Image 1 (cartoon, rainbow, N blue to C red):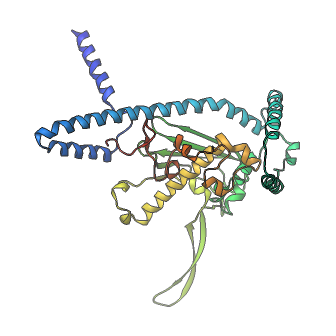
Image 2 (cartoon, rainbow, N blue to C red; image 1 turned 90 degrees about the vertical axis):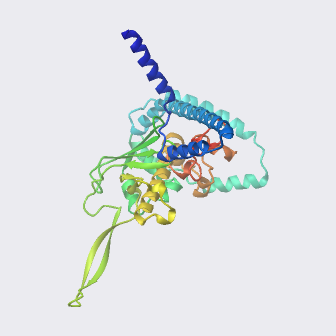
Amino acid sequence: MAEDNTAAAQATTDAAAEDAPLFPVSKQEREMEQKMVKVICRMPENVQKRFQSLYVFSDERSKINDQFEKEVRELSEAYEKRKLPILQKRDAILAGTNTEFDDSCVEFDTTFAKLETAVAGIVKTDDEKEADAEEEKAHEPTNVEHLKEKPGVPDFWSKAIKNHAMLQSVITEKDAPILEHLTNLNCSQVKLPSPKLTVTMTFSENEFMTNETLSFTAVADNDTDQTIEVIGTVIEWKEGQDPTKKKVKKTQKNKKTGEKRVIVKSIACDSFFNLFESKKEPEGIHDKDEDDLDSDDDKVMQQLEEAHDISNDLYDLYTVDALEFYLGFGPEIDGLLDGEGPESGEDSDDDAAEPKVGGKKAGGEGQGKVGPDGKPEDCKQQ
């Protein structure tokens, strides 16, 4: 009898697990489903059943799309893990802890010879040759003379970021000297159970802050892929060195005496280091009309979108484009906006193959889940 009860309980558990959604279902989705069901239940009886069937089939289709999304994320995580040993070898060279280069140098020489042969076979017009010559003349090779007397490449990340046009667009004059002390960058992301991207920066001892490391995690909504929270680090700035604040003078007048006095206030200002401030999507923000958003809510949403953009730029720099940018071969800002990165293909329609964590950059106005047919699945039920 006890065995029968156990088997029945297990069957109930298995059935519940099978019916449970693979991803958390939002309040908005639940409400939409309820509205649809109510509409169907109010239909004439001889019409109602066909729409009940359509609803069930739509739900089954959604479950397949969810399974597709889950397997895509699992595959992405598997490939992320495959990259790790390579990134660790690179980071060891940059840190100066790996000085055994012989095997890699043999492979480099082989690749170089193949490239020389391949490029020699490319036929170009006189105009193309002239453009190539101008480009080569304009390119300023990265100066590595200072590395002769020291191990590793200690300025690798600070220089790569300096050469990244999109990142430079958010780095202020006050930020720049602080980032000169950047000695290491590390980025990682997970797709399950929900998308998270973590960026960690390590700094040498400096006159700006006491922190040795700064990190933040961008957390995305499972359904929309929009960044909804940033879990940051409290930065311990040294006296007068906080680039996220600026001092402004304001004249105050005493209403009774007419006497004037000048006060100095500290107010927030644009800075790359605002990225490390914790922030969260305001409760109920998506239930409000755009005209009803107050300035504070609007500011937080803009900050979350910016955090998404910067975190993904840093992630791409860390996992894909680091050497290109250090050597000064990264695209200009127009090229980045057009999607012409060092690994971009000719067909820009493939840009959304791997959605990124967070807001618009992953797919225009918030791409959301992608179904097996390659098209966005805007909501659970269609």
